[in-house]
Length: 165
Image 1 (cartoon, rainbow, N blue to C red):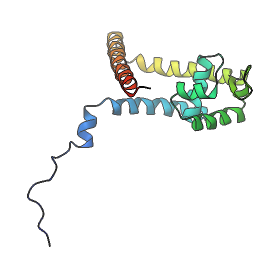
Image 2 (image 1 turned 90 degrees about the horizontal axis):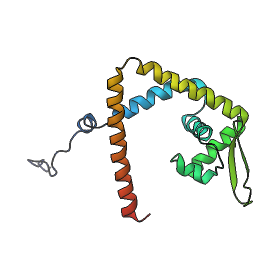
Image 3 (image 1 turned 180 degrees about the vertical axis):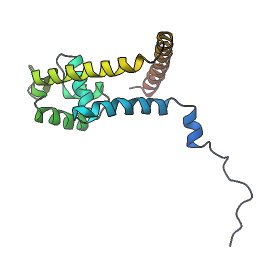
Image 4 (image 1 turned 135 degrees about the vertical axis):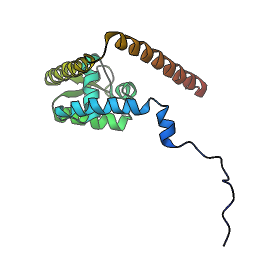
């Protein structure tokens, strides 16, 4: 029987809790969870709900491939989402006006009406929560979050440029 080594072969790693304590990720997860819990009332899977809201808020000619890129989901997932939206008569896929191999996505009147109600509900949910926070704190958080988002976007751009994509 071999004796255990007297010291670890690798330096001790920081625990997941220690890493997360310094991260914004748990906060984003918590905020996302609260919005998802609130939006559960609409009885749509989160990806379907987000895609419907995107299509409602950004109307125009939209193809499944560009939609997948815009909402940062794989094309197969977007196909499932569009199948769900069509089954519920919230959106349709139509032939592309100039290329019959392609399709465009359009939100139906029923889809726009539902998305408008969902969006108004989300804004009210957020506004009610923000009433508990001082206006100066909201301004400070918005300033910070914009700086943070800009820094994340810059890193993504650097990574994109470095990969040559």
